[in-house]
Image 1 (tube, protein in one colour):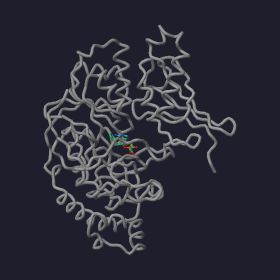
Image 2 (cartoon, helix red, strand yellow):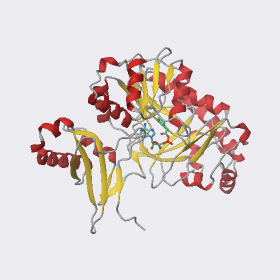
Image 3 (cartoon, helix red, strand yellow):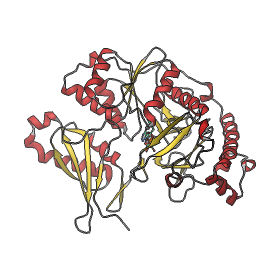
Image 4 (cartoon, rainbow, N blue to C red):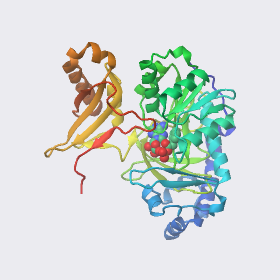
Length: 438
Ligand code: DLL
């Protein structure tokens, strides 16, 4: 089902010169604004750089990077550039290390944020008059509120279902008949599973588009979700340190995620040398938001690996650069026996086989000197009830397929349907029990 292509804002269709001239001017203003933050003021002083030195977009390369560690070291609000009275909202991202990282928004920040979310939603087919079910957590996480205000800006009505309680999600989906669904790809899988287990007829729903984001997923997963849920899916990307959802999103043509270039300067760098990689090559996204007031950031190292799509126009008419899916994070890239592996490669491999579900758990350990990699994979209910005698063959086939996707041997442990944990938000797919490198 192809949806109608329409543009929300004419600044999505500017010429390259126009975009760059906005970016340079806003980058200069951002450099000026961060002088209010002692952390940046010190860095810029040491480098001897000021706003007047920003003459072109490429001058960004002279600016210092910001990392998650910098945010932690300036916890809780050391990177704020405005007095606290100017802040209208706080959000936070949970890290693996206990305390969240806080981010702050002024009135203008919130206005701009809802605008950028409205753009990608509209580009994917959300329209005034549609109803949207938001099945993201509402809270410190930026997903719920971020999508909420973008949808409101478009004029879609909202069912703030929040995450979890799958049975109730279906009551809302069946009775209020939303056209739009907003959640993580993993939660879309959970909804599909519930629908199939409970024999809920697809015709009892009215879904047309699912806006999925906040965690890595693959093209194979798209086909699976679109086929089972009979919807169009659109990927959208963002991170709370930079703003939240809204940095980029797919239009109805699925040619990559359009970057909101008047709001963000996105570099794609080799994570080791920190030099730019050519378009089409995988690198780490380093993002400078260009308009933020409460918590401006300079060159935030996202650790997200993606590529910038090689220069080719999108049929939708937007002229903004596009980025690929996130292929993984440089810090959740697994190195198994020296080979770099992303959990998404295992997911791609599993989605080739209809006898297993896309729920999996990678367990790594090192019993002797060598890494042992096991992937627990759930058999589909049909296979489990009818074809158990073919288990060994399925295991061997899966091991071969996974090897062809990842380059390494994973031992497949076939487990019963429903035995792997389900997630309402982002999924955790890896348990790494190997001793930590010193
Ligand atoms: O996940 C913001 C968001 C909410 C984006 C809703 C899209 C929809 P954080 O919790 O700070 O913010 O997590 C950010 O999630 O650095 C990526 O690693 C990952 N991520 C976000 N969107 C995608 C995506 C939100 N579309 C981290 N594909 C980022 C893959 C994604 N990974």
